[in-house]
Length: 198
Image 1 (spheres, rainbow, N blue to C red):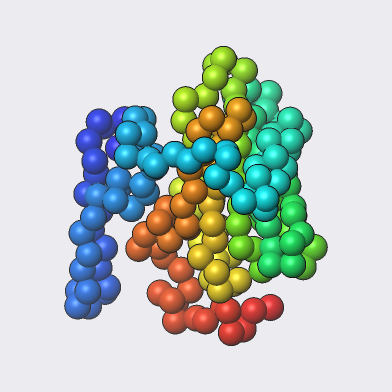
Image 2: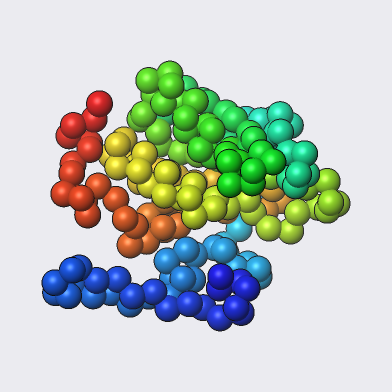
């Protein structure tokens, strides 16, 4: 709605007894979702370590498998586990738009279905046939940030999020804590999922 209204919406959070109140703006809560990425520190692909490079390549390859008849937008994601396993997936669209599943959640689901919940990094890459070249990185939507945050709680690791365009001209690396500050998670429910990891 902030994009529609053209203003940075104020978000006020409180406990039911009003002992703890926090006030933020949506841009503070979901950074990197701006149309102009002046504040994003881009890195060169030459500065990637081998794991980061391989993860981006897996995400780029996965994007080719996207099922996207409605948007024509290709997204690939690849997750890396502590053991070195990589699980990659693409976005799957649906005529009932709300049923669409993002590549990030597909890749995490793929890892989870293999019993791998010790995720330490995720790479995301996208492209669109409508544009000759993407000018911005491929950063995860709010729902995907929440799912990545949840897996960070399970793995006990502030998951590294590597965002890249297909050509690797625009790459940004942030932690999920940086992408989703003040996140809602198990702590708010007084649950330690790292301790009781199923």
